[in-house]
Length: 345
Image (cartoon, rainbow, N blue to C red; front, side, top):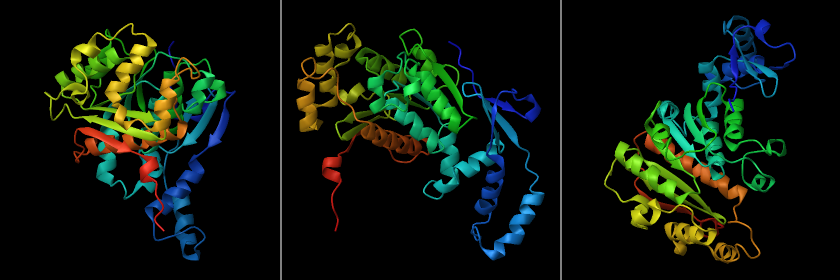
């Protein structure tokens, strides 16, 4: 299926007649004045004259963004000013130079369950303009507790849903969609083909493909990140193959031969191998109890939406650090709400 991207249109006359019109330009121009002139606040008497002068003489040319799947056209600021305004509240938690480097990073995300929260966090924080995303699966109702999707998305490919969410926020994003997922045949293309990745994010279920992707990234010297939602907690794995190309995959927790041939596994075999990669010592008590009930009273590995959101935030932080050449060493990082969320007074 070919997914139609948002269309950037320079003239209102070229918008389909059926489209609903949204004006984000007028208020955006007003916001831009206050972003450019932070000494002024809205409703300040002394801001009135310079504000009105700016509105009369700004000279900014609008663009129109048409979303074919919504039949909506949004009047918008041009890309550079839209991005400046959209990331204005990031400053200076993220500096201008850091934002530029973060935006320039090319990132691939495979697996759009937890991965959908990661893609959303990257886009929301003004991250990579170039994204490659992949998932062969369709949205189901039981996904809606954690995936960035809605009831009306049920039956739609997860890649499509994720791309549309990004484009509705960032219509200028350049997204490569792999709706059939990543396979042995297209893995090299995904990682090292057009727009070669700077960072690879693994959120796949297939253990064999997890291993195969790491071997390609080792060869290409590309860092691999993986976030695992673990009950109320998150594990963030960082493998800096860009700095340590000889580093063993999965931090050496499993042998390559164990995972490279791990196809056609029974569900029980898959759970056993994945648990070994995660390391049982990191599993909370309720997660251990839940895993032991899979196939009995529980249909699949439990996951929580809020935890996926935390994973997205952690991943966006790690991507930003790596994109800016800041310290983000290989290893396993743990966000443990049960221990870390503590009362201070």
